[in-house]
Amino acid sequence: MTRPTVGLFGINMTADVALMTRIAQSAEAMGYESLWTGEHIVLPDPQEAPSPAPPDADMVETVATLSYLAGVTTTIKLGTGIIILPQRRPAILAKSLASLDVLSGGRLLFGLGVGYIPREFAACDTPMAARGERTDRYLEAMRALWTKDAVSIDNEYVQFDRVTANPKPVQTDIHTVVGGHSTRAARRSVAMAHGWYGFRRDLETTAADIERLRSAAEETERPEHLGTLEVSITPPGIPTAEDVEAYGELGVDRLILLLSPHRGEAATMEMLEVNAPGR
Image 1 (spheres, rainbow, N blue to C red):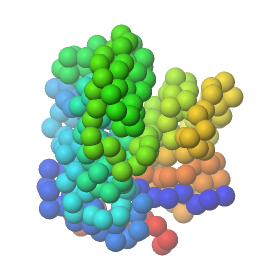
Image 2: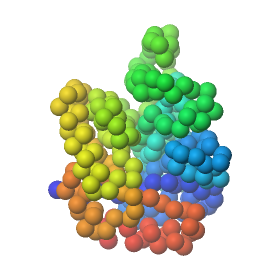
Image 3: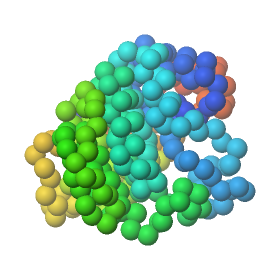
Image 4: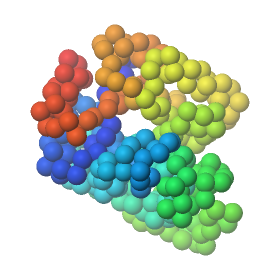
């Protein structure tokens, strides 16, 4: 068993830039592996299911946040957890993420998902129908821009006619992680990503998730260049030392712990210190 690395989720859940900076720099000094943003472009007001947060919740935009953090840290990885890919323009997002990878020296972890809030899709002028297929085609198009010149694509969702985007990312193949708990997400992870990310998953649901990934791997061809599928989990609360060991035994490679910066700096820093890797 390999002990999971430890990251932090929710670095952008505060508009206090000084606090965000202190959290990021402290996490790096304490040995945390990665910082992850959450994302919703807009939220229903008033809150209604399936929205996960009230409309007054702060969520600083993902690429802006990680670009800023790239300038105030040096080694910690920077993860998008997750970008709702069908709500974004693939050429524009590809450019933004490649630039972020360049500015951070190759530290980007690109987490993506398909989304699930109808009113958010409407506000982003994006249909929810076929969002899974749109996600797949967008990711293919972005990878083409990251790795090739004079790219031409012509399908229902993407049309490029001999276009090039530079600079290319520092990473030859930007590390990509698919979020979501469906069978389709498991298959997408196996076929198109370096890893899979489950959010608020306890030990029981994680075990079921990993079994779903194994089943998907039996039915879905995995490109050799993606390597072994990596599993990342955000637990529903702060795991005990025994929990961390149990997640590792299940095959989890990375635990991404929930930050709560709205609780204030003292409580946040105490959480970082208590859960620092190696303690």
